[in-house]
Image 1 (cartoon, chains in turn green, red):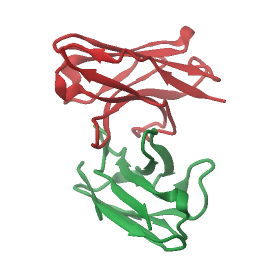
Image 2 (cartoon, helix red, strand yellow; image 1 turned 45 degrees about the vertical axis):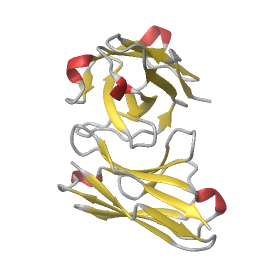
Image 3 (cartoon, chains in turn yellow, blue; image 1 turned 90 degrees about the vertical axis):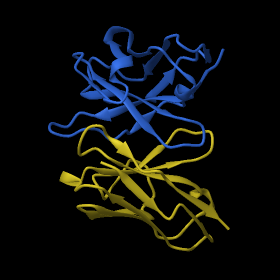
Image 4 (cartoon, helix red, strand yellow; image 1 turned 30 degrees about the vertical axis):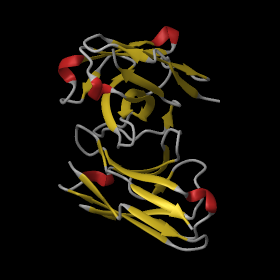
Length: 107
Length: 123
């Protein structure tokens, strides 16, 4: 399954709402979709799994939604520490695959 | 605190075998119901899943790499390993070990990651 993320880059200000898109080339069954945040020089951090369940310790300003082939990560009120690259990942079929990423820049 | 730590071979010559080990601390592999996973990320690029293994030795491989890859596990040492044969410059990447939950009928998301180790393939 190929995952296409958009936009490639976004630049927003603290307090803004960010909406990141992930589109799959085939239906992602059973809500098997996750989101990660990666900062420079660090490993990815799991934010959301099963489309909409927040991982342990993730602030509630991060939320996920969607079904089928279209999924969204929303950050309701951006904080300065939210900069980084965001990846979606499907685990509906093998091989598990990641999207190409959305780079979020904080103005 | 549960942590994963990759070994750090650094530089590997073309055509040789890359060998990596990941050590789990703060938990026991043999008491867990998890999959243990290798992924990689070429410089400036996205993430690629390589292989997964569970405590009983059952493995899954990415078909794009399967002919060159072996993953193994040593539950008593709390370690799992990756061998990647016949490396070329395109295998240059940060290699991560990670953990994925075992859920019947599903593959894995990854809720615990090592810090990653940069492997450069060069003569």
